Image (cartoon, rainbow, N blue to C red; front, side, top):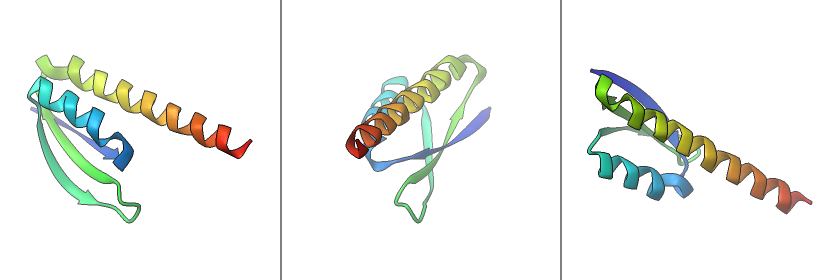
Length: 75
């Protein structure tokens, strides 16, 4: 079994945990950091690797959307 640690912003929790629940992955809350972000660990098997990669892609997309919003607000 392998594990991966993620830092999740409050705004992204819904979509992230919906995917985790749908796929039946195991999640452990590690801590809440000073910014209020959740640090979670996901345990996965080699067979679940593709699901984990889709979670990484989802977070990348969400972070890109957030950056674009911040940039448009700054204009």
